[in-house]
Image 1 (cartoon, rainbow, N blue to C red):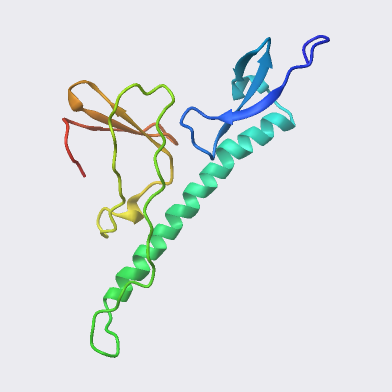
Image 2 (cartoon, rainbow, N blue to C red):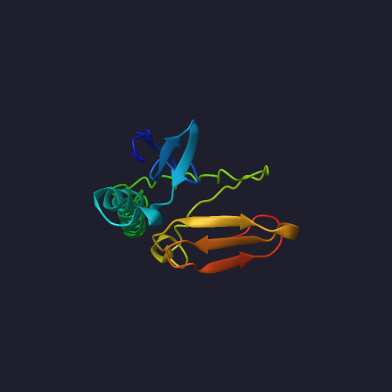
Length: 163
């Protein structure tokens, strides 16, 4: 409420249309204004937004990484043994694909990205850091991958598939 005028408050998708994160919007004079989470200060609304957009996302990332790492190691161990018929042990866990990526609402290009997590022991799931990642396409086809939890930047030169 501003002065004597009540305004509608609603939740809207975040910058990347990720259903796990949302932003607050206020309706003022028929115009939607997105409220920056940092400007909310303290209190229960700010705490709930931070819990929903940060704490739950981080916990989900850690749980997913743990499940992928444990499943990979169990399947590797399973492959070392033989069944009653002398065949190599089949994977115990069917490890699903990684979650979908979400495009920024400000994207204007037509690029598409396909990703997967290698389950090779050397550079696979156990080396994956639990975080959200941002992929940036630069001039000349170069790609920057930024780990959002700590800002670590990995640059990949030139276009084309890369590992």
